[in-house]
Length: 155
Image (tube, rainbow, N blue to C red; front, side, top):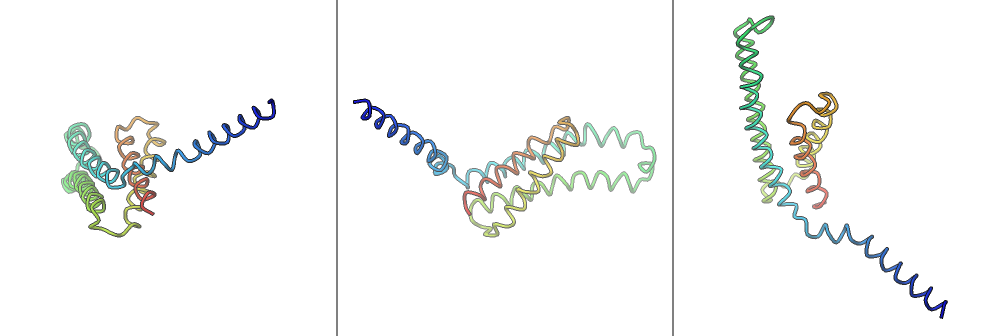
């Protein structure tokens, strides 16, 4: 009787280990790469709007209102504002690229991986350099993670 109980317990433990080991791959079957890319694209839109609006209010206007140093030059002031908002426009473009990739209109997986890797690395660098004080790092990291996770699921 004791040997039978030990055998049953060992079989139950083996079944539990197998179920736990299979759980991550089984859960991945319910995660849609399209959904992940669309979320990343939407977050690019959010990041672009926040970057443009808050950057203009909190950084550019105060900096340009009291020009000192290089900002005394009108060209430098114009280029600074242009470059700031151009960055936001590029973020919109990246979001459009991710949305197009989600729907299969862009088949270059290397491009999606590059977008995800650059966002993830930049977001991690942002949190380290600013010690978490820059409000953009969570969005940047999340865009990168969602994009790379989507690429992982499709490769």
